[in-house]
Image 1 (cartoon, rainbow, N blue to C red):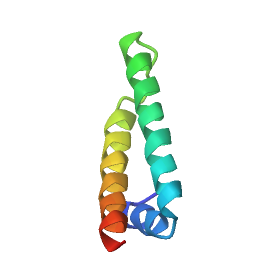
Image 2 (cartoon, rainbow, N blue to C red):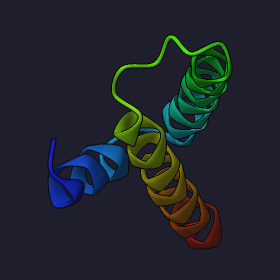
Image 3 (cartoon, rainbow, N blue to C red):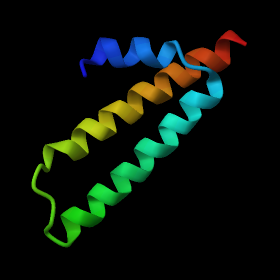
Image 4 (cartoon, rainbow, N blue to C red):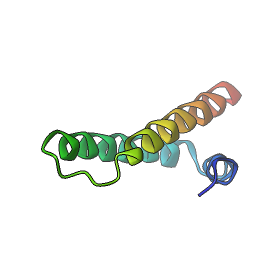
Length: 68
């Protein structure tokens, strides 16, 4: 999914759904880091993708909280 599509999708979600998305991405990042540590991670670029997506979610989350 492209960045703009991802951000537009996030903006369409409710505040609670955005928080849930951040939590699930954080869990995914943790799992990826564990897999990297034991040498089972094939696509290491996935870690940086997830980190960027978390940053996007945090940005949208701050937009939503400031709008309230």
